[in-house]
Length: 432
Image (cartoon, rainbow, N blue to C red):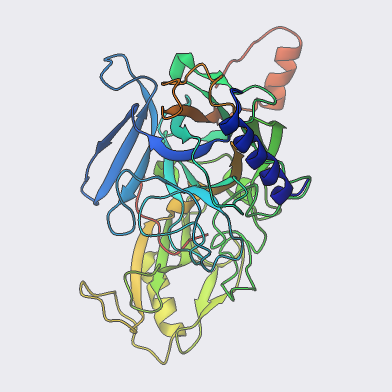
């Protein structure tokens, strides 16, 4: 069924509901419900945090497994917003409604305009984002679907094996998954959805190629890398493992690492503009103790991608990396970036953690069009003007340690049973 047909059917249900005593009523997502959220900050880096709890925070037994992080340069309190009847904009994949980062960006804004809210997992348990619903009408040609623009980071201090995301009602111990056919679901786009529809991908600046936008090939690989996703049922999807080929994420780094585990990189500011991202030129490989440079500069300071994985030129120190870049850009006088930026003047931005190795983009759609607002047990007000809610539950999955072959043999014979189981800096130049 086409989405437009689906909307017409839900609109008809809405009209019928308004003219009868029936309980069906089309649902519109209105706001992020903050009853289980505490906003704090700024920290020393200017970041604010909307910490999400499993109970109302006034309860002393309330626990948290994550937060949404934002700053006031690009974002706004509380870090997430719901947009209905979105302006058309310039996006190549336009949507009618979305859940996105709070701030000036819009659902259909230009590429890399700051649409994704930044959710960090701090413990392995579930993070429950609650949303308010109403029966308000959307525009006539609105399909009623909501694209979720999410960036998902690991701040647990250890590796993670994947994640799952589900729809339901309530929070913490009171959470119940949405039932089949209740009108609330994820959108199934078929066997091969577009990346903008249903995907979980590390930044293209690290893994991938985008010839359409004439961007640099990914630093580690020209092949996209991320988590495969499986729509288990209409209310739950989960990861199926990492993909990416010879130089994909898993091949180079193993399981999904935490921010504190991300290696350092060396960055080059090609335009002298602090509001744009500097570009990753080299990374530190702990296994060899070497700085590996997969990118180089031509004589005019233009960036070239010359290698993948750990196959780039090796250097013993940061100073050697800087000397190599300065020698390559022979027509420039490269120096460290000054405290006061000089627009248009390329400079050496120095080292920082490659933070985007600990986070990735997740894209999916929620369909609340046919949700029965009056049958939900978590309805806060049975009147037509009351507030109704649903929950988006996001949960990380622990890494599973794989025993050595000798250990497996011992386990098989019943002799032994083994149950086993740098800092985080601001990433530059790895936007997706």
